[in-house]
Amino acid sequence: MKLRHLLIALSALTLTAMTSCSNNTQSAADAVLENIHNRKSVRQYTAEPVSEEHIQTMLKAAMAAPSAVNYQPWRFVVVTEREQLDAMAEVLPFARMLKQAPLAIIVCGETLWFEGKENIFWQQDCSAATQNLLLAAEALGLGAVWTGVYPDPQRSAELSAFLGLPETVQPLCAIPIGHPAGDDKPKDKWKPENIHYGKW
Image 1 (spheres, rainbow, N blue to C red):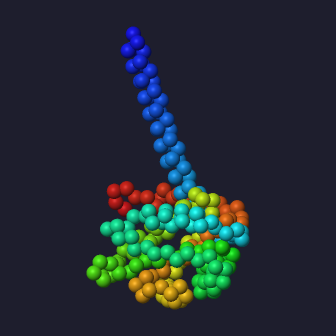
Image 2: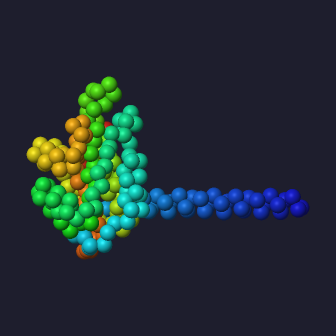
């Protein structure tokens, strides 16, 4: 009888643990999906600086992105100096909010691959890293916006010169980041008509 009671108790504990694990997994999935759907482009910031801890968290998330043959061509330039941010705003016409942002992360890519060959995947790889960075900013309660640099030749050349980038490193985008000054809302971009199954 004692053995029977013990087995019943063990079964109950196992079921409770499985249920708890299932609930935790669902909660984690819900949190990830909520963060994805809440991401928005934020262009107004307070003067509050972004902590070094948050900067490192965003960069770690960016570097967790997938890349072709795991080459990880991304390179990042972190800018926090007010004078430098203001000067970049003059170079980048779609990043005027840099005059307000306390932080910018410029996502760049190594354009050479193995044995000095052209890396034709750096844009895709660095775009994946950029999306991870933006999602991390959202999760941290920060505001951020993707402002394009590549493939505009003038913007690319001017920003490369400004940042002193090596010849083989190309800026993809500049991400102004800060604590949101407004109450920006995410856009609903769900459009079932854009989905095709099997073929067009």
